[in-house]
Length: 150
Image 1 (cartoon, rainbow, N blue to C red):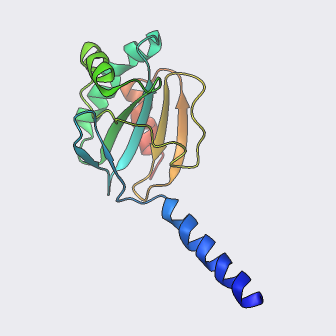
Image 2: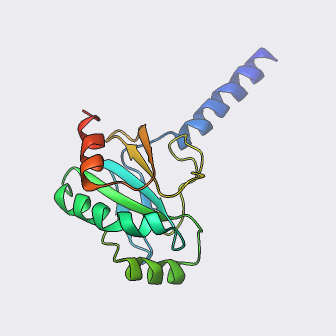
């Protein structure tokens, strides 16, 4: 009986480890392309079309993404989780230059779904959540958050 219980515990621990953060995680963008995240800091931004501060923040995220592309990967997540063609149209209208994920990696980093938009998560290169920024960010506030990740 103890052997069976120990075996079940080992299996449960092994299976639950499959959801552990990994720096080599991959997702799909709106075009169905694989987005490889390994080795870079992730800046994961939740946005929605109806969110005025989100619209104001997009140019700042674009500039930050261009400036730090070697070290940082900015990823967008549409809060409303609309069909890909609708999200694509909204992203184009907003001028989003960074990848937008086709689906939300729900609680991927042990964080609940944001309740306020915009919300930006900072995930280190090892796939571990480090910080959440709530409200619209500037290139400077994003740079400061990145600098504090060292």
